[in-house]
Image (cartoon, rainbow, N blue to C red):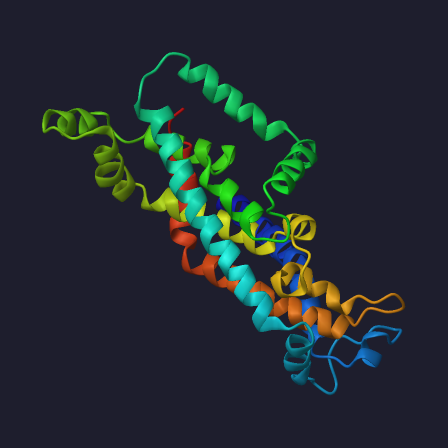
Length: 277
């Protein structure tokens, strides 16, 4: 019996190892390409290890794509979009989870149904609206919508977490004279750090990696983001893959850093959000 369990465990670890190798291989390929010369990238058969190692690819790639300007624009958009989504989605989720009003469950189902709509369906009306507002070639279309709801996914995630918190806390606070808003920011938010960290991680990654939004609304070179800046290495006749991979690796580092640093809260927030329907 113990021998069977041991074999199952060995098989499980082997499968996990194979899966890990498959998932990490593209990242290793990116690192390998970022340290090569352009001619070496094109060699057939493939060269797996760079020789010589070209660390200068990073500085040359960042200089070519005007990295610091693109980084500033990306940080501005990501920061304010993240703040807007966290504040607005938590307030809407609090209303659905802790307040009773007619049609609450129906409205929540309508909200969830919007998650099944392809983004392209609403993109044309949004573009027309922002054009009439004079917001084309500004950061407003990428930031302002975040302050109006924050997205159905974040609302759902926060609402599920809020429902795990005992209602006795609300009742005790109301006896002491607390308003709904005071219950929200003095009781609910401090208890919701894990799920708020999850919202921050998702919001950061989505805004940081967003390509479609900046492509549509940003026209000036000094307003573009890092996702658009990576196009600088793709020409009509050739693509500078060594510079592209070097720049992509630098753009990827903040995403990896924030995920690793908040992984504990991320896992805890996801698990606890599904404990109660």
